[in-house]
Length: 95
View: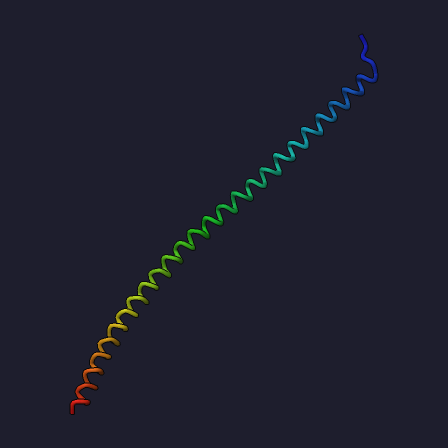
C-alpha cells in the first residue's frame, strides 16, 4: 500500500521538527554546561578570596591585640607617673 504524498510530507515535517527540537535541547545542554563551568570557576575564586580574607582578619586581630597590650602598658606607666607627680606636688606643698 502506497502512502499518500501528504502523509509523507507530514512525516518529513515531523522528522524535521523533531531534529530541530533535538538540536535546540542539545544547544541548551551545551549552554547550561558552559554556565555551570563558569559558576564552578566563580565559586572556586570566591572560596580563595574567602580564605585570604580569613588570613587577613587573623593578621589584623593579632596586630590589634599587640596594640591593646601596648596601650595598656602605656596607660599603666602614665597612671604610675601621675601618682608620682601627685606625691611630688604634695611634698612641694608641704615645704
